[in-house]
Image (cartoon, rainbow over all chains, first blue to last red; front, top):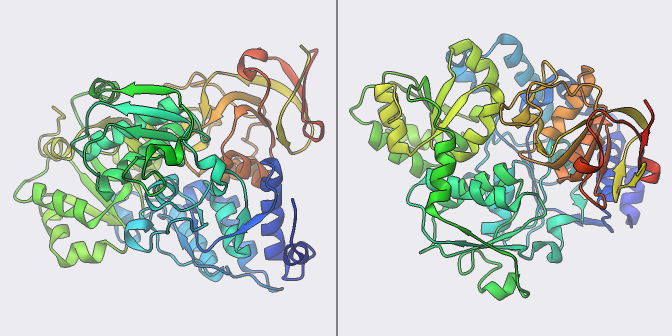
Length: 410
Length: 135
């Protein structure tokens, strides 16, 4: 890689061991991908839940935080993804003391490194969305695909160590979606229907993610009527990223880089069609049982508007099984203030904050609570939880709320 | 064909047994990391141990957690010996760099067809070379 004088100085240790370690890691990654140089980034978003870090990752963070030589704090605004628990509800979730202790240690280390503990995977709805052409280093695939596609920002998937490195150095290797050429569409998807609910938007994203197949594919999606809202595109993108590792999509006339098809697809593209039958088949493939142990709304965290809708559906009902609704620490106080939390919890549900179900020791929760059959309206969540020993089932918010009342998914 | 050249490589030279499937990989979605096995029921390697094996798979899937998880698994001695993929996403590369796990990616042809399951492989990242060796 071509390095600036400042970067050579960092590698020589002029700013201390922490920035040097961070830049060494970034050079390894950049050289793997053939990056020519670094690009300055304005924000970083760090995924660092302790189920992923484990003892080894937490010790590594603590080692950085304890460094006394040179600079050890991030130099650009650096925020955090959801944590491994909601401390206020940890007993209800059955989280073990050892897991909570690990969480506390990770938080203490991240704070010492200067990370803002926003604990959210919907930062584009709650903290600050990136802007068109802004180069950023975001973790959480849902944040990346939304920021790249809906906001027109430039980010690769940055795992925790790399996002933190970007926060510490203020830059990231210039490869992948930081390059204009990489952002052109590679596949045209013609859709002959428009999803009507968030689970359908997620299922459509999942089907397109599977068709796209890998990180370097950029689907151009045509045929949708009207402009989807932020929550619809949140579920659409998060599922596409989850099922296909996709980081960027274009909707002509909707997303900012594709005012016209030709803006992102100057040449003919391979074309595939997606019908309503395809998303119904995806939903059906997860329907393994009628009985349900738990209902979960999460992945991504719920916006205030989603919580308002959920609260309206919970109002006056009484649940037979647990219902969990997970949101961000920015949204939760508003949900409390507006009475949404009270309505959901009066029905027997629980509103959680600052975590996300699959990032919060989902396997241990299943063992502690005896939950296996799980209903959700998140396509992303059903895609993830199979590996955690759950039987996840995808349905609409209405169907999930009804399942919480009856214990059965009709 | 005893030697194959990758377009991208990192890590140290290793020799070991290949565990091959035409399927994807995500540490979060697919693995029981406590037991060191593939746990997602629909994965072609469901129930099989990946510990100490050279994983030969199609592509990286899913979320960003693999970047931490490879390091965490390596710290407990329950990591794959190396990763050999047709294509990778940045997360797998960042995870391999952070966890110090050998990684080769990008071949002329489908690597999951070119390498038989159980083959003994020698990987030399400095030369971007994968070699099949006698058992």
